Image 1 (cartoon, helix red, strand yellow):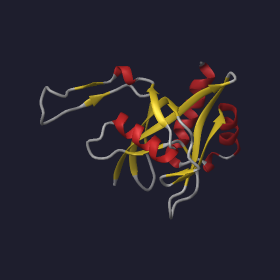
Image 2: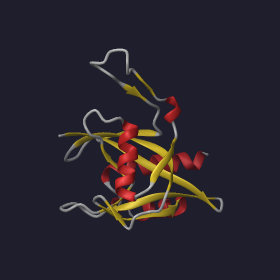
Image 3: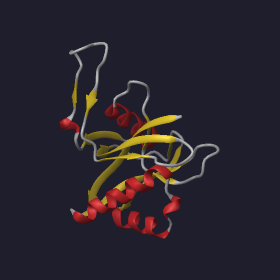
Image 4: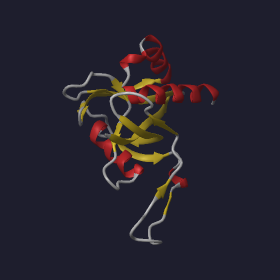
Length: 162
């Protein structure tokens, strides 16, 4: 099985402090781990469309800004039998070992609306500070979803050099 994911690093600044949205995975038969919003893209679904859909389904929030969206180009209209999208994401991952093979992209984004109490196969979507995120990762990286662990470390490293 090969999966492709679009993942959201949803940011806001509140009183000078950067916060992001995390949630708890709540899927039957899977460990309940902390994860970033996002999920599998459907066949021929664009990365951006998948991101917007997954964020809405899991958190109830509406994506209003996606970093890199202004870089998006597509080949629609050139050859209707083969259309391609190209966009600059924040980061990308690929599994290099594990029970399934997947790749995914992370987009930093901003949202509006109110968080749900639970979403599609998720529960407890919540805002946490970057410091809280770093502390949780340092305490026990295994409490995070397998695919998001590296992405969160990548994001925390990026925040440090900003």
